[in-house]
Length: 486
Image 1 (cartoon, rainbow, N blue to C red):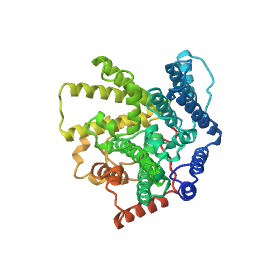
Image 2 (image 1 turned 180 degrees about the vertical axis):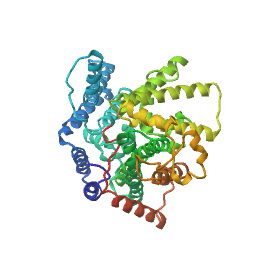
Image 3 (image 1 turned 90 degrees about the horizontal axis):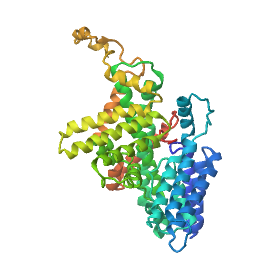
Image 4 (image 1 turned 120 degrees about the vertical axis):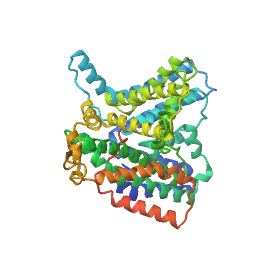
């Protein structure tokens, strides 16, 4: 079930919300938590009930392992480190089988010239997110950074439906204590107002802005055989903005839905396209993933406590892993490697004491991100090269006929005056939307800033009503969530 669906907005969310607070009002706290867990499992099983046993097995397994790691009173015959390694390997084995088995088989066949049959395993919903979340729980339990909680609260921590599909990737210490606070069992009308406001903004970002950009991105990447200069840039920028408004919009809906239940999820986006360098970008983009990679991979590898050369290898390795986490494709590996190289170059640049003009720093950073998203989106290398050739080949420059008289001298340089958008459609509409998106990402306050300054008044009520109504009226369009199967 998607947040941007009539079933979720008008049936599932209201039923779960009113049922939960009805039970808490009767002081049936345990029953209300069971209600929320069952509702979350129903939400998960809506996509494919066949994978419900997987998340249940994963949850029970990790709770058992985490409890044994965190309980210092129990004397174990096996060392805690061995138990931790067993738990991590078991989680990664499940993730590897469902997400990467066909990828490894296909590459094995290519290298060995064998013909091993692919398994064609369907990717379970949100397996990357709940796997990373529970690995973090095991490591924290090993470090004695967890407290003992019961299975019911742990089940809420794992399955809580607002963050289940696409994060944020939460820590136990952020979530589990919230399920114990007695004042969270009472409806908080300020939280409800903020939750509806943020959910409405996220819905608008997803179904109005992101899904509009998806039209041009899909045509450019998947349909067009070739692209001229302007079409190629329109395609790459359309995907750059589609991805941001899609993922950040969905995260806003998650944060808003959680607030209805008095649960605060961590910030996951902080105006990432305002970043002035690649490190700044990763401090703003998918913040909880960056935090996981830092705390559970980069620091255990030695972080910056090792020699300079080893530190560069650690940085590169983290981004390579982060790229592969996104999907079983060499394009994700290439994307991760490019960001790894960029972060190493940035570290060298900073160590040398160099500085750039702020606008130039933003311009370089944004364009690097835009170019590397091409590999992230492309299904095959040929698709990426098609876009990049159009962006930088300068062999097929087409300007609109309206400029033919004033700029006719450009014909001598190979410029053609014709219909510019022959392959992605909608004429100048994409240009207008791209300009509109630039204004939003640079000059508008992000959702988290809006939460901090939120005040319930006619202005915020009108804004929420506008975003919600326009979003609801747009639900009839074909829509997808880019991180749905990550």
